[in-house]
Image (cartoon, rainbow, N blue to C red; front, side):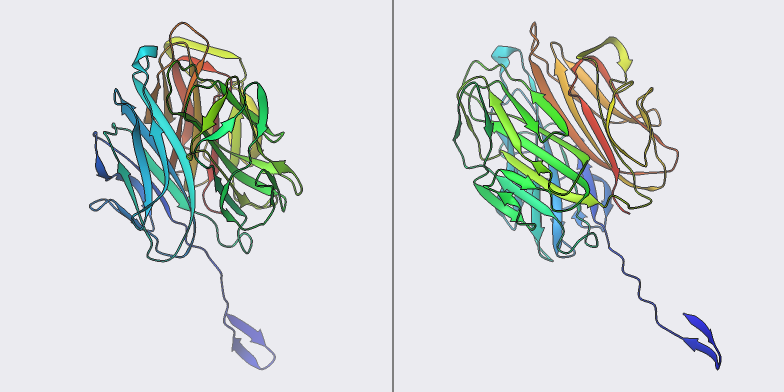
Amino acid sequence: MEIATDYGKAYSPVYIETEMMYAFYGRLKDPAGPGLIKFNMDINDGYSYDNNTGIFKANRTGFYSFYITARTRTDRYTTMELRRNGVRVGSITNDLLPENSWEVEDGANNIVLSLNYGDVITVHANGTLQAGTMMSGFSLRTLLETPPVVLYATMTEGKLVEANSFLHIDYDNVHINTAQTFEGNTNFTVPSDGFYVVTVTNSFLDSAIHASLISSVIKMLRYSQLTVPSRTSSSFTFIARFNESDVIQNQLFSLYEAHLSNETSISIFKYFEIDEINVSAVTVRQTPLHKYCETEFCNPLANGLKIEDMGSDFDIKTGVFTVPRWDVYVISANFFGTQVDTVFEIVVNGKVLDSVLVDGPANDYFVNDSKMVVVKRLLRGDKVELRMKGRSFFYTIMSIWTLTA
C-alpha cells in the first residue's frame, strides 16, 4: 500500500485474511450400487470431489458438513454409508413396507466431521440406490470464531424409548463438541449470539409413532404407522437465530415403546454472527394444517410463517425467494406428505432443480417425510421456490442461506 508522508512516498504491506470455502453437490442420474457410489457433481468448489473415482479429498484441515439422501424402490434394508479413509462414520438405512403400500423411500442423514488434509471420503451402498440419490455438503467457516462452534453426536444402537412420554435424548457418542456446552449430552447451551444450522435425525429399529421438539424456536413432527419390525427415520435441517444461553435439545415422543438406531444424530454449528453484512438466511414453514394441490402444482409456503429472516428477499405472499446477490447457496427443504403420493420440486427460474416423490400411506393421516439439501450457485435476481402436487402437512419447511460472507 502506498502512503504519502512528509518525506515522500512510503510503502506498507497489507495482510488480508480470507477463507476458502469448499462446497459440493452431486446426485445419481441412473441407479447405482451395490458398492462404491460415484456422483455426478453439479457444483464442486475447491475441486475436492473426483467424479471418476467417487472420492472426496479434504484439501484443507477443518470441519465439514456432509448430507446424504438415499432413494430406494422395492428393496428392503438398503444402507448408504459415508466412510472416512475406508471406515464407516455415518449411514442411513431405508426400509420399504410394501404391505403398507409404500414402494418408494427417501432416507437422509447429516454427518459432521473434523478432517485432516488428505483425508478421503467415499460413499458405499449394500443395495441399489435410485436416480436422485444425493450427497452434498460444505466446509464450515474458519474465520467466524476460534475454534468454530460445532457439535456432532450420535446414539448407541438399541436405546429404549418408553411409550407415551417425552424423552430428552442424551446422545451417547459425542464426536465433536468444541464449545464444551453439551450438558449431560442432552442440553446444548448456545455459547454466543448467532445464526445456527441445526440438523436432527431420528432413526428407529421398530414400530413407533414419534415426534421431535427442538428448543422453543421451531417444532417439527414426523409420524409413522408401521405394522412390522423395521427401520424408519426422519431428518430435518434448518437455520435460525439463537441467543447466548439458549438451550437446544431434542425432545422425542413415541406413542409406542421403541428402540433407536445408531443413525440417530444431532448436529449444531454456528454459521453467521448477528450483525454480519452481505449475508442472507431465511426459514419459512407451511401454515395450513394440510395443503391440497392434487390437480396442479402449487407453492405450499405461500402465505407461510417466517421463522427466520436475515436480509433475504423472500416474498411471504408468493413463497418465492429472490436471490439478493451472486453466491453459493444452501437450499434445505424438508417435506411432509400425507395420505397420497406427493411430488415436491425445488424450482429455480421456472426450471426444476430437483424433485422427490413422498410415498404417502393411503387412507389415513399419517405422514411420510423426505428431505433435500442442495448446494447451488445462484445469480442475483434468480427466483427459487418450492412446489408440490399432492397433499402436505404443515411441518413442510425450507431454509435458504448464503454459503459465504
